[in-house]
Image 1 (cartoon, rainbow, N blue to C red):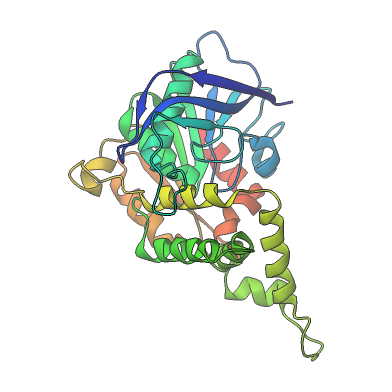
Image 2 (image 1 turned 60 degrees about the vertical axis):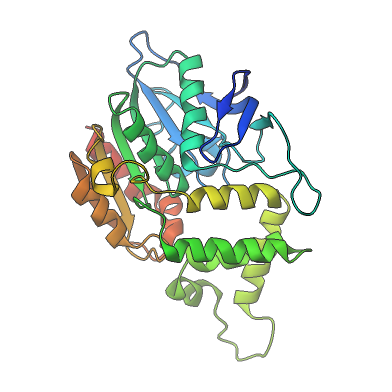
Length: 325
């Protein structure tokens, strides 16, 4: 069973883009028990619209005998700064934007990691045995392993890149434009996102019509369903904040470039790509494997596209357990 917690940090935090936080209340979940040597900690970094309950959204690798086994490990997952699932940031001063509304929080991946580090210090964690994440979660893992290279022993990066691509940024901007268009904007944004999370083959396999009728197309129903699901559980402003944070991802910024930055990683690293991922193509994981010093690369053959890092639990579990053992 997970335990839900909150920790209020009242110290000042200066964000990378210049805003200052007066305080931040961090929502997080823990599973299992930490051992006396602090040698069994797994830290999970979650993706864009997920939350701190890794047992819910990553159930494919969670449980007895799996990677995220609370009987064996002390597992931590914290809600990302900027998310609408419990982590609350208070700006020192609020400046209205041109529309007279309070200025949105401006968060980067590095800011998210700084908040994780604050929480880890509060929990008296001295070492992370395994740091793991997919997509935006893996972006955070990478940053953390660069900032504190000797704090992370092992790392697993799924479906991610060293720097968010122009292709990925373009998808995110299209989604933000949809949100800015007004009513049902988040629903439309999710429909756009699904095009990047899946691919041509997967839509043909799961949402094509063979009956010959006009209208009531499976693909339309699927897009409407996915859009409505997110609209019912997520906040549009958080979506904008978090998608901009993803755009900011560039491990080489102010570090002399990507090559220099990734060379700072000391953790043994497993990099997992999904063969049909069009949002983070396999070549981006190959690039990471060439630059992270002690790394292995595994490509999982899957039709599910980017979503494969969530759906291909059996293969992912097997790869990670082999890597750890």
